[in-house]
Length: 207
Image 1 (cartoon, rainbow, N blue to C red):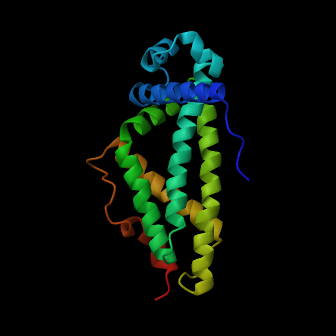
Image 2: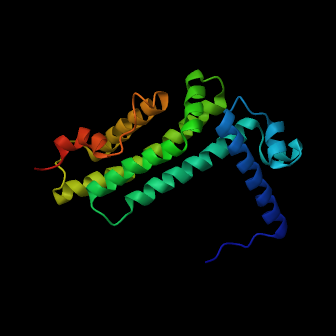
Image 3: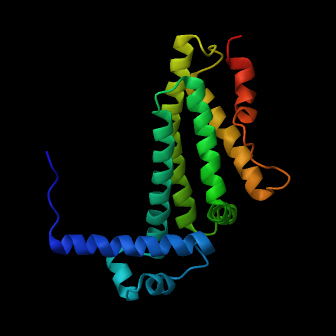
């Protein structure tokens, strides 16, 4: 059944919201939460600042909606990788590679976000991180299913609970990526996903 067709007024409102979100995302990505004002976002979107408050109660709400939308796109990319018609080892390799590509392409805004998170100076930032972690844990269920499938096929040894293994892999890749963001020359993210996966694979894959 097709969804209800939006009226012309509703389409215009949605268009304005999308333009505000796009402008906000550009500025937040470049300068972080504290480096941007609602007036600057309004100028970037070419709207009066009052128009922004017709859609968002505060800069914090706009920040969270903007960054969560980006997070959902990223999670969607990872889910798509896990749905590929390949074996379990290939899925995990593609997952590690996809995470690396995203971080490499978005290093600046990720670096800014983590710097602000360490300061934890505003509830909008800590609340956003909590929401991101919730989405991250949801993805872990899909990764756990890959481990479970591999165990049932005999590709992987059952050395631990699939969900714990999924979280372990996520934490390992996250550590590699954050180390790269802090010091890319000393801690380059490996091009070969097996550099990361072998931390688990050496004890996981049957000889």
